Image 1 (cartoon, rainbow, N blue to C red):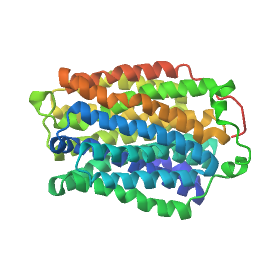
Image 2: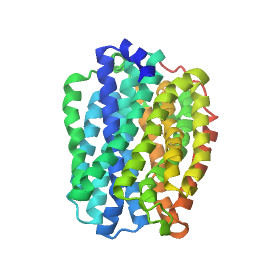
Image 3: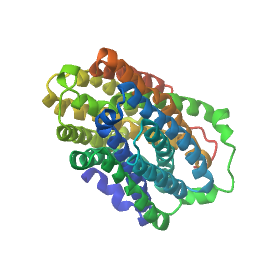
Image 4: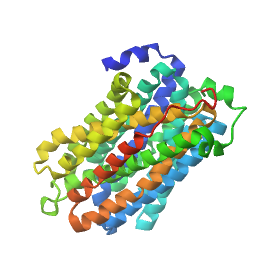
Length: 406
């Protein structure tokens, strides 16, 4: 894209490799999330799962992801960003493949928990790697670029499902999840640790500094803000494919698996543009202001998305929801990375992001539960409240304290 050429051309080979490693890792993380959402109807049918049970399985994955993210964030601050990135990707790729061998709900849930442990660690390690490799003037654009690969991975998961599921069944779709394991081989040999990490690794302050003194306010605001935003995101996007494929009589749009994949890919075009555009909009209006506006528009657009009767209108509304309802994550990555010092950056980002995952773990279950009584469209509109709450909390963001050089 033209808007990205300047800072990418100026990037060194080391910076580009770090960018590629974090971007591809995040893309494949997203691909796994989409695979589960897309094959959920087939899994429900074969394993006789209710909507609440299916949502609870995703909730268990998110809780495990929170635990894994906090651990891998701590690990990244002590052993290195690239080692944490590799370990997390290897764990979630193997666990995804294992899902394809399961035949009971308990076995599938166990594999999803293992997958979550790995999935949770990828974001903190990758975001810290990029934040510390690029200079401050390019950091926002670089992190937005990484975040945009979530949309690519989401679309890739939809495409893989459309190709494999009709012919080979849902287990074959899970087998595609082994792909990230091969990426770890390249990361191990080609991606270097940031110079700032190597410089500051000898002086590691206690992690408890995140919860007292000048860092405590940022930790609290980031964690609660992200908890509300992730609750909205997981509640909405876990169930969007099911909403599209659900019979019209049951409150959905009755799309086939191929059409559901197509509609989802179109929605991800808006998501991709939202991720990429955030950094440039924020450069003009400021990170905090842009982040809040994205959340407010997301809160307003979700009820429209949930109430549209004509599925073809979703081709317009869907990308708008994708643009604002996920694009704000680019802002969170920059806000969190610049709010904490190098010595604690991965630990802090792992904590504030994954505490949000713990809170958001209830969202898939609650949306599934509410949908059984009031319909899925009505249940999805409840995520607007969480988007609005995240925007209100974000107004409490302050400038970063100068605890250490970063």
